[in-house]
View 1 (cartoon, rainbow, N blue to C red):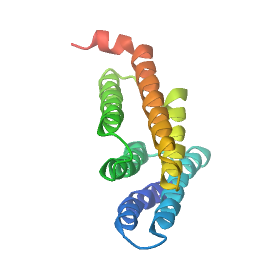
View 2 (view 1 turned 60 degrees about the vertical axis):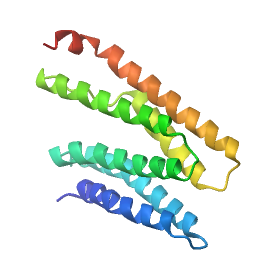
View 3 (view 1 turned 60 degrees about the horizontal axis):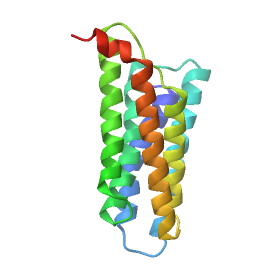
View 4 (view 1 turned 135 degrees about the vertical axis):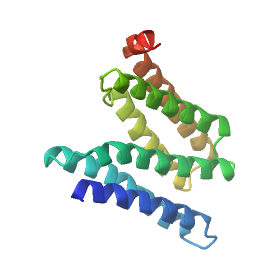
Length: 174
């Protein structure tokens, strides 16, 4: 197993640790959760860099890296819903976009075409991670609403962009 894949697995292992710490009702737990989330998010950028720079791209990494990212983000967002800091509909928007883009990629792969991550998808991921970090800090409630809006808007924009750029794939689907 190469270094990039080990970092991806580390991120997966950090997800339950992140949630466990969030649910601990002890002083300072939120700061530990924040640290775990930041480190887990950093492994996303690092494993991608290592995979590309050192030619460590694998099928396992292509599958597990985006899955780990989605699980980490969904874990945080679902916790925010549970504690009343994010509306459930916002999480649903993110989930629908992820399923939609994943489905589009599966149809494209069946047709021999690969849909690489686009610029707007990278902006969506980065802004979502930053917003989650902000929401883990002791911020005023209005910032939760602003962060939720940023997450939803970048999610919708990137989802629409993926579909508009690849509408021909759906037109060919039978």
